[in-house]
Length: 362
Image (cartoon, rainbow, N blue to C red; front, top):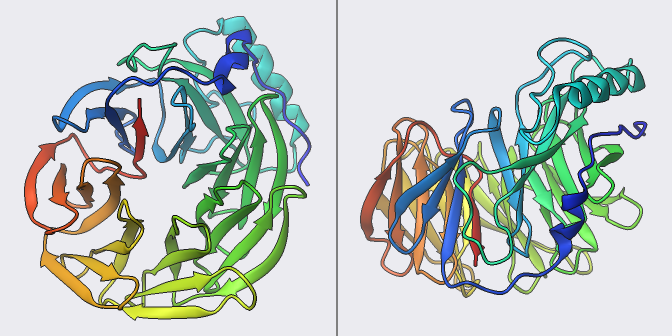
């Protein structure tokens, strides 16, 4: 277990877990990886309305259910104590930032490299998310962060570290690294159950998913998958997870009760992203190798696909709009696709490659 690492704590963050009055609209946040920004898109108009630029190499992104904060993981790494340590949040003084990271470096001498997750304020009361974001804190974690997930109550974040064969659990209220947990080799993606009691992590290196208790933050069992499991989607009723197995072109549907029975859907070609329709009856999968988007009827197993390319990549269903946003690994765009017909409605021009998208209603 890693020692706890202190970080700068701002009093304003205590309000993060308070609910806010709903404001009509759906916003999509798209991290741009090495582009060092997060795009803000109005899902009604499919227009980019702003950017969060106070971030570094964000691949993994998660949003608090109350719509007030994002948690962004950085894929950039730095050596403890070096000048490449994470940049200070805008609201923290240079002296505070320097003192904090000097102490953090002495806490983990055994760790060769570190990275960080950023907590970003995106709303204040009923205010629409601001274009400049507002990183209220950064928390040091061991190793580059690929994907992130949040518990439903917004108190804990989980970050995957493929290069460390581990995940980090961060207590957001206390701004501390609670635990570093070894999973299988090359942990890639994480989801957390809707009741907050279980977390699931795909282990691309040994074809399993780890089931983790969020009470003890210990691995309970491993669930077999297809070859190279990466992205995950949780069933709307919480009773199954759906796994995109990148290298054998299949999707595993794993029932989580009892003996964890698995159904396999053959999609074909190398895969990447996966998400579920609003009603939970259809899984959408991006086929990067064969340039296609596939819809799987989860009850009948029937497949429907459309050609889309090049290299369809991350995808997200946009709750309440009937849309799918699908990024390309090779071109700077998001396709906007109808969930029911799979018709491409249009595209959104972006400056790079879109990664783990977050959809928040406000």
